[in-house]
Length: 255
Image 1 (tube, rainbow, N blue to C red):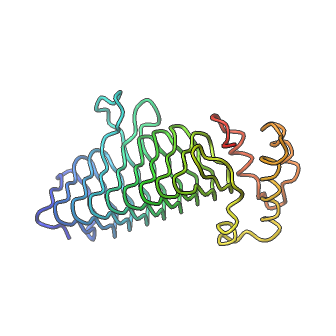
Image 2 (tube, rainbow, N blue to C red; image 1 turned 180 degrees about the horizontal axis):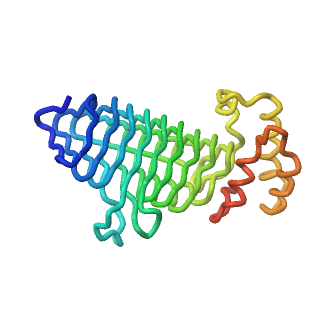
Image 3 (tube, helix red, strand yellow; image 1 turned 135 degrees about the horizontal axis):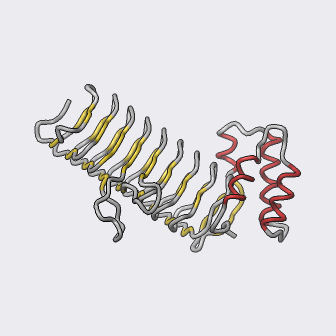
């Protein structure tokens, strides 16, 4: 399952049914799980752990961080299962100044030309459209969607079930459920269609709409909004993750 033109380091641990296409280069302490496919010209360098059933299209590169402080330290990339990385995606290993690793969860769809920088943490079920780019230390929570050419400043957090419209320039945290767009990105409403597709019922949708109004339509300071959100939360804990996200925000939220 390894093309004769591919170069694979003897230290690499490759499951027996992995497909490695022409002119791929696998260096360092790489582990690739069962069912994964690497098309032509994929380059993976350093300490990288890849789970099962991942598909890397042509010219995907996993390499050292683009950080001038990086001095060859042993940092890593960890990738879960069932992810798709389209052509020319670039992923950077972590740095010792942060957690030392870049982490990508399961079932993510990463389109052509996307850049995931050092020390980013990506959840599961996310979609990154063409040429979206994350600076270092960015956290993207489950089910988030980044439109094409979205740019995310370092240390920003993108909340679960949020939607960033194409060409968004994001320099603060994007709360759960919220749609943002623009340069600089501003709030445009809630991700109603996405929430419906993920099984939110009418009562939950109504609650999320009310939470959005509290955050963005009342003139509340964040501390005041948090207090109100805790008071209106339902028995299902629909707003639990939003409240945790807002309490942990260090850059402030998109306004």
